[in-house]
Length: 212
Image (cartoon, rainbow, N blue to C red; front, side, top):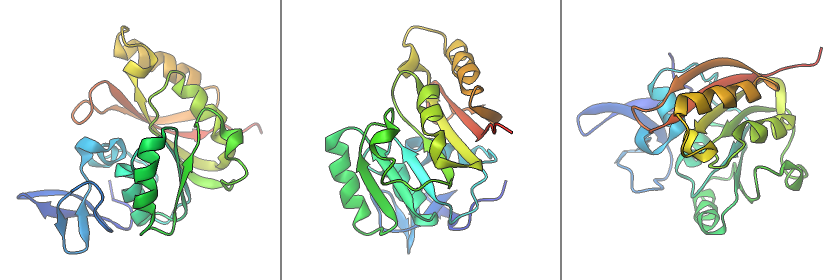
């Protein structure tokens, strides 16, 4: 699977690994202007390493839910267009604001991804990609509520955390339940377990269902 424009494979520690061009954020190694994109610290990076068809080509307008301190969303902003980054917790949002200082296309929002009405006046509609990495129960509901920002042929790229839904249930059963809920709003195109990089996570690529 080809990588998006602005994402490349560079040699770090003798291995070919993902990289983007931009200022380092989390102490990652660099190779000239290129910075390592550590798939072990990024679910989206893991999706690209595993060859999922994310639909990303580079330059997309993105809404990122669960941006935390900016590890993954900084890489997204390196190769995408306007990138709206929603994070609920104040402490990581302060780090996220620092990350955005050198990325004029990255817009940090201290908001709750479960309440898109609180940021709908800021985030444009008709976005190309919704990236979801939130640690909360009801992850399918979060994706459904934020579908309003996606264009009809846009993409949802979600990392579903089994333990956020039910810490005691079998992850496979949790994933099936979440996918069933997700299918009310989205057509699921591809799924893959991310256990090679992230325990008990399921990657989901989907597109919005249309009413016509």
